[in-house]
Image (cartoon, rainbow, N blue to C red; front, top):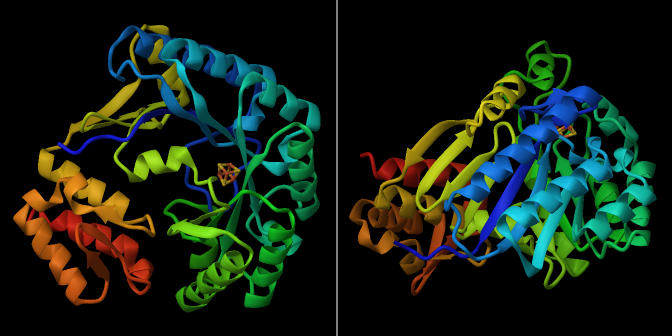
Length: 383
Ligand code: SF4
């Protein structure tokens, strides 16, 4: 079995103040009482895990608060959860502790409190620097709130700051995307994530497209925007280290790297997913059921799958291919599986993958088809 590369904790905070039109994540609209009950449940969940031996004895390399919008909780609540996580699992001295935040939901004092509590990295969902584009997808906040949030984070002592951006938004043009990129670069974050807008089942956006109220994302336009981002960001000193992620030297996200390199991570909170020692498992995507399970002293796990060695190798290959440096066939264990290697060789022949010794990676053409490559590699084992 290939060696894992560290272990981390993901904490899903399932609240937002409103739902963006494109969002399909599990979440509830924030209410103070519901948030208090959730925090109590989450602390119980962390305690139950700490009483077991699921994660190895090594301290955590990363903790990531995602959601939802973690900063719908007060900084006191977030600090309390972080304290419980540290006490439960231990934290490596140089660990990364990230919190996702909506730029409009932070204050300088709140951020300073988070920094003092031990958070090392803040990730703002900026999405666009064009107010009309934000409004069209029901995204609260404004470009100015992003500028102010970054300044507040710096004043609070954060030196590792990520901005999330989206391209292919309704009405977005190559020019407006270029303007957003320039303005984001001026804010000098250490990390930028650029995501193509996708249309998910059950979202307001999907309904609006079906009713011809909003145009569907144009794949050709999105490809052009992706190329523009790589061009602008590389000239500004950022390295594209993963399909959607760019960083200054030394600021790659450690939490994300755990996912891409086969590290173990435990997920807590409703809908959170875990991967530990070849087993994938996930929590129930329902806050009422989540609270009820923990009130009764039970972990809220609703699905669990022990991967075969072949499936585990294939998944590690699929995730590793997201990294621009590629992935070692030997470390994933893929070399042991004939069908998988046949598919890898087919994809090399199609100029989708390229191989250098044991390292394999997506070609620049292949990056456009990363999801299709994943499906076809996973399917190779069941053919
Ligand atoms: S803020 Fe993020 S999690 Fe909340 S609704 Fe919008 S996209 Fe979804």
